[in-house]
Image (cartoon, rainbow over all chains, first blue to last red):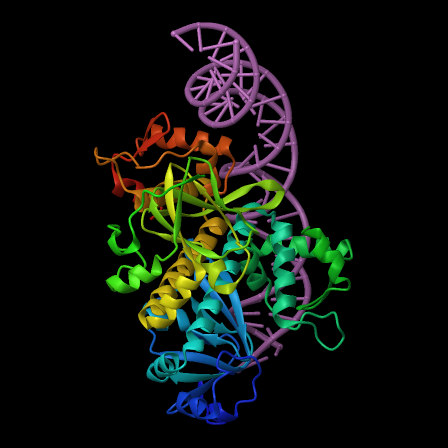
Length: 232
Length: 232
DNA sequence: CGTCTAATTGACGCTGTTCAACATGTGTGG
DNA sequence: CCACACATGTTGAACAGCGTCAATTAGACG
C-alpha cells in the first residue's frame, strides 16, 4: 500500500450516492478531519479476516472483493465493493474483529476515516443510523439469498448468477456487453463456490450455447435477458 | 391464529434479554400502547415471504422457524427465533416486503407492536438504534458463515452443523443431552440444504458412530465436544 | 529467455439426488 | 375407541454432477 495525499477533503468529494452524501458541508469537514488515505495495487489486502478495526474505509476509486476463508483454505467470495462504497463498518460498530478479508482486484484508492469521526457523525445525525440500518438490511437480504443459491442451485446456475452479479455490480464497458471487471477463473469459481476446473468447463459450455463470449479474461454477455432466463 | 389477551403489558414483561429490556418503565408502557397479541399452533404461518409489514413481532413464548422459498418450491431454513426474540424488523424498518416466512414450530404466543410505537422508541432512545445495528450485524455474520457452509461443507458436516445450531439455539432438555426442539426430517434436511432421504441416512450413520442417539423425533447428543470435533 | 503462475483438458470415482416402493405414525370422524 | 386416510419416515437402486488428481499448455513478468 502506498500512502496517498491526492484525495480531496470529504467536503469536496465528488463521488455520488455514497453513505455520507446527505451530510452538510460542515459535517463532512468534521467527518474528514485527520483522515488518511492509501492506494492499493491489484491483489493487495486492505484488511484481513480476524484483524482489529479502528477506522472506516471509504473507497475513493477502485474495486475490492470481500472473501471469507472456508474449510481447508478455500476462499468464498462474499461480495464486492467499489468506488464510493464504505467498507469495514460491521466490525467497526460492533468492536468485532473483521469477519472477512478485503482485497483490491484493481488499483484502488481508499480513505481511512477515524472511528471517532464516524461515531460523532452517527450521533449528531440520526438519519445516518437509519441509513446504516438499511445498508445492513440490504446486505443481510443479499446474504440470505446467497445461502439459498449455494444450497439449491446447480454449478451452472451458480456460475450464471455470479456473472449476473458481476454485471449488476460493475456494469458493462463502452461496448455495452463486456463485463466491466477482470477476474481470474479461480476468483470466478470462488464466487460460485465451485472448483476452477468446473468453472472453466462450464464457461466453455455457456460459450457453446452462445450465452456468453470469452476474450481472454473478459467475459461478454451478448444477450442479458437470455442469460437471465437461464436462472428463471 | 387465536387472538389472545393473556399477555402482560410490556412494562411488566418478564422475558429476559429481549431487545427492549433497557427501556425505562414509562418507555415500555408507551411501546406497548395498543399492542395486540396472538397464539399460533404448530405449523401456523406468522408472516409470509412477500407480504407487507406494519408491525414488529415480539415472541412472548414459543419457537419459530424462518424459511425462504428456493427454486422449485424447496424451502431453505434460514434461522430460528424463540421466546423474547423480535421478528420482522428488517422488513419493518425498510418498508420492504418480508424476505422470508415465519412459521411456528410449536405453540407460540406473539405480541404485535405497532410500527409507530417502535419508531418513537427508536428516535427517543438512541441506544436502541445501536442495538438494532448490532442485531443486524450479528445476523449478517451468521448468514455469511452460512454461505460458506452451504458451499464448502459435505452433507454430513452440514447436518452436524445443523444439530449444533439447534443445540445452541434451544439448548438441552433436563437430561442434559436431548436437543430441546422437535423437527421433522424434512425440516432438518431444509436446515442443512440436503434431501430428506440423505438426512435420514446420515442420521443413521451418525448414530452408528455413537455421535448421536435417536428416540423418535428427539435427537440426543451424548458428547457435545465429540460432535463439535467432527466439524473441526 | 527462462521461470512461475494460471488456465485447460482428461480420467476416474464418490457423494448425494431422484424415483419408487413400502412402513410407520398421526389425526379425524363415525 | 376404532378404522381409515393421509402425512411422514425409511429403504433400495440407479444415475450423474462435480470434485480431485495429474499432465499439459498458455500467459505473465522479471
